[in-house]
Image (cartoon, rainbow, N blue to C red):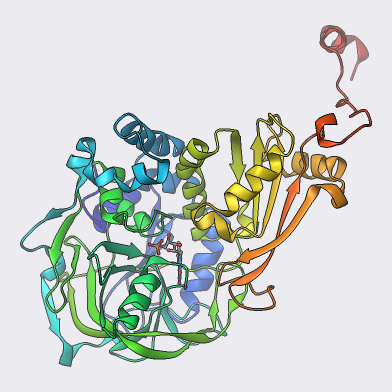
Length: 481
Ligand SMILES: Cc1cc2nc3c(=O)[nH]c(=O)nc-3n(C[C@H](O)[C@H](O)[C@H](O)COP(=O)(O)O)c2cc1C
């Protein structure tokens, strides 16, 4: 049964001993970060702070902060099964390209049960606060790290519509609170929210925005998923939770939002308006420094009577977002394999913060195959940000660092096996000389073949014969070891 809302998930976590309530007053400025960070690092439970200084509302954090909790959130044992299910749905029906199939999902009969369902009202409308009374400073919004530029909403679901086509997008983009009625809108240039905004700006239009805080866990996750543009995250959320997301019309903007949310912030971003945002202690483990971002003006807040404010912190890995990212790695692997069937497995190590390093194993069939895979991945959705891609043979366990480094060091001739190129990089990549554009490296760590110009003999791995292993097993006691 799908979680109805955030509190349904919280109750489940609590029943399973996966959530602890903290009754003593705590400060949302830095103190909660230190507590939540310590708990993430030791694989501890989610935390519900009942008394947050300066706010009448409780705050919940670490909802997804272990691999087990991530599976509980999406109600699956094996995350890869989700990707395989998507393939089952899109495969037989349409003989078009893979991306076209994915975009066509909403039209498929099998998806009909998951299409967002419009409802007249919902718990998110229990209290309606008009613009004059809007005061974001009442919310228990955290200042996460000492050098942060202020307080940041860190787990928001940001809804916009394409100003031309009306297609909906929902993405997770942090929001710095500037004052009681405005925040920053930190959608990176490559993301769909920014695409909508830039389009509206070119048309000289204001872009309406609505932000949902606190939904059922599948809906929260969907906002972070790297879906193709114009694929509705709410349909994807319905698919994940196996029940449609109930949507309700906003009060002051022409957008729909999840009816079961804890809080909804309605408002707009104006063309041409930017303000300095940041610094912010980011998921790379470094601060992302100040930059100019659009300003979100809040025109209305609607909320439950007793809402729970959801939060997360990012920082030096491992942090909660690592488990969200790892879920994405598993869910989307079958879809990537559909495009590149030679891919056996993929590891985006959490220390590589998802856009710095990918280790991929392939079933190599032809000369240059590894380099083809490297180039193909750089052309695939948000994989385009990957700074370093390492390709190994199919028998290498990509999740075993020790094996990967051993193979990499031995198999690579840097002059022959390394591709150095340049292209788009993640906004958070601080190493590139200019923002958003920088160097990339692909490393072919597979065994080299004669057909690849390798004329020497490739040495075999050292392994004992089965016969001698069996003999030693049998005689083990005799050795007295
Ligand atoms: C906790 C968390 C915070 C994030 N913050 C941002 C952010 O501030 N800006 C951004 O562009 N992406 C951020 N992301 C990544 C996006 O949510 C992700 O790339 C998503 O796929 C974007 O959706 P879109 O493709 O619809 O734009 C964050 C992800 C997580 C899990």
